[in-house]
Length: 245
Image 1 (cartoon, rainbow, N blue to C red):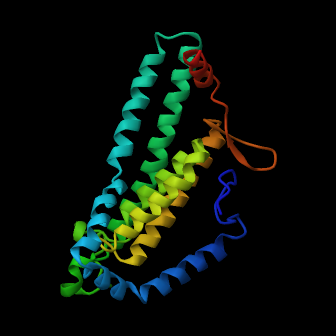
Image 2: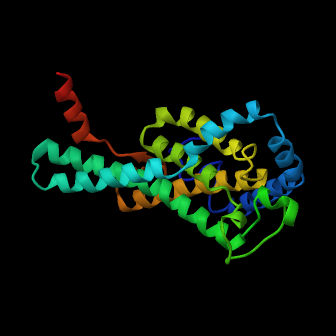
Image 3: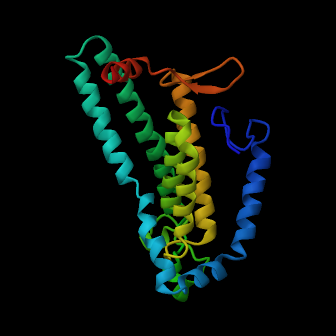
């Protein structure tokens, strides 16, 4: 379904962007017709049905990815200075991977948070008082920061960011990311439209960061046919081979 080496997902290109935007708006419109029923119905499930969703939903928190990746990036860059040879090369490559993971997850998260505040949609907890389509633009608190879902964006962006570097991890991480995104409805944090928008922002944000790195020649490179591939991590490979001997 996803060819991770293509510049954009779902067949996107410069010429197809308008059609893509129309399709996204159409899907949001369709989901909006079931927002209330899906949200109220899922919140009303028995506690034992909802419990697994409360367990997995925190995977969508960005801290568990951003804090370790930022710390690793800083420590590895500092460690490069006294190192020489393959150790220096491997440390630089690992630092670059950490930087990409940090930005690949952090940038979509930042985009989502800006949209949340600008749009200011009320969360399901505000349904009884304000309804499903109430808005407090810009000047709001977390109760009116429902669209798009930040957990959904983070979980899906994590799948793509790691998938760009280690493609074999992508299918499993994408399934986990989608489950986390869906969990936001039964835990009462978001409507289906919020979740769908979060998935889209997370996916496109991760591609945006990957494409920027490729333009700079960092970690990725663009092939003559337009495909974007990860550069060989020669230092890390040599280091692993030495330790395995």
